[in-house]
Amino acid sequence: MHIGLIGGIGPAATVVYYQRLCAAVAARGGRLELTIVQADIHELIANNLADRRGEQAEIYRRLIDRLAAAGADCAAITSLGGHFCFDETAAISALPLVSAIAPLDAHFAGRGLGSVGILGTRVVMRTGFYGQLSRTRAVAPTAPDSDEIDRIGQLYQDIAVAGTCSDAQRRTLFEAGRRMVEDQGAEAVVLGGTDLGLAFDGHDPGYPVIDALDVHVALLADLATGAARLGA
Image 1 (cartoon, rainbow, N blue to C red):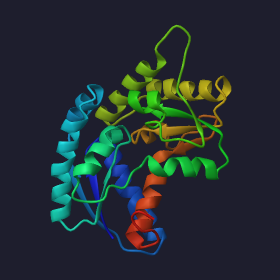
Image 2: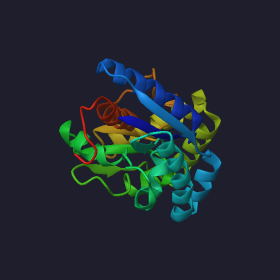
Image 3: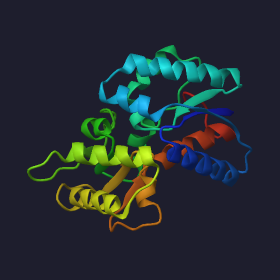
């Protein structure tokens, strides 16, 4: 199956999707057919914060039309924050959309996790992956006398736009995750933003971490190699 990716949101996340998808398909002994189109991260952030779902869905629609013209059989958005208008996009898309959110509930349940902490965009943290977790409890960052979700959401946005993560930013994210595990009952912390690998990859924060990107990539690799079917 020819996979279409909407990239650029942000560029670092797109690179990681490409690298991990190539590796996952190769590990399955398959051959990857892939086309990537470029979205604009600043446009997405503005529409996300203003909850302009229709406007962003129309932007995605035009990009998906380009993927369809290139021969793609399905499309995926390389940003969990970018899924805020998933339903609106799916309704007007020329291709089936492969959600990064839908597989997570089954993945967490399969690992026996009753509660997970979430790091990512403001919307992802506030809504607990858009309310799509039914078998696992979602925990968002909290801190005394502060709006921790806004603070972490802004920090994540800065990392995604810059494509880099400083040591100070990494320490802040690690500490937010630690509080969710030690104080709020999370059994693992989920990287619910596709650029968070810039902070966590190659580092041990001292608690279990699940990268939601890997769950999405595994599904896309199964589709690419015929191990899974759309809608199955």
